[in-house]
Length: 382
Ligand SMILES: Nc1ncnc2c1ncn2[C@@H]1O[C@H](COP(=O)(O)OP(=O)(O)OP(=O)(O)O)[C@@H](O)[C@H]1O
Ligand SMILES: [Mg+2]
Image 1 (cartoon, rainbow, N blue to C red):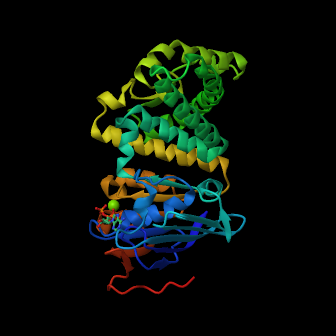
Image 2: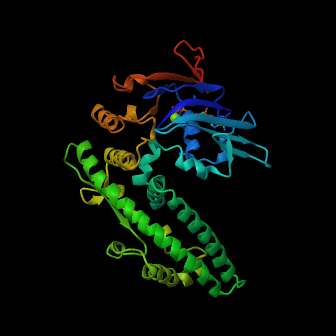
């Protein structure tokens, strides 16, 4: 799929942006703090995902204004669709999401429409950061393939919020401990689904990562990913999920209940899962060099794109924020080869750091506006 038109105004420091992107490469150039990443982010949020910077929605609105809008036209193998996202500071109707002229209840409907993958410098946190970063990566990637996964994740989150609130009530003597049982049954049902889906995605991505990492490291290193469920052993996950699995999950929750009540939080279940990333058999988080960590994160994102491509006839749109210039020529070529059929938006403060074959539409970002080389605002009708 590809974006054929974008129109953004009042999103962070961006104003009056309207352009028809190149079907292949769009190179957003400019000094620091001009709005290059903001432009990627303004398009990214139309995929229904949260900001890739982890920022709050209210921060999307320009500090000097009270409304923002981001609109794109998107062409896939079937048709052209229009997505609009508007927000105002007013508390009554702060957010307005419109798909093909029809107002949507929330951003979930967009999930199925606009598929994109972002590569950002913070991706190294998938390898280096807390287990939550790895779980989030797997959850988001798996959700892109199967949006039902989001439903299970949301249900599980809601159950956990309730459970954790109840734990505090119980500790204060305001509720009997028996009220937990009903929530634990529900948590076991959702948690079992999530465990199986995570296991399935990790084993898929592990295979591809192994192959890609071998290539990127010149055949000398091996990258592996292992799903460590907090509840199930690998052999448990080999048989289909059933009521026995749910019972196992439920018992695990019950085992830590006393401790949970004392501490006011839940200590077992999918929120304690880990995805172990190893290079040549040792933990990349603890022993990886900077280059290894960067390459591992890059390969995981590329593997995500490859899995996606296999499942869908429409390639995702790729956002590369400040990553190409950071890579040596071989690695840049490797990435280019992987994303050769996709529309790409990339940012760089320095276009000369890019390989010469990256040619396309140049967009100069200056104080939140796009200008052409001469500093004029280019004309780009719909
Ligand atoms: N809500 C907001 N309202 C107005 N300006 C904002 C808002 N949020 C961020 N900014 C401004 O946006 C600018 C940063 O934009 P962005 O992160 O896109 O820069 P960049 O061009 O990607 O820079 P770099 O090369 O350093 O990554 C800063 O000047 C910041 O003050
Ligand atoms: Mg930036």
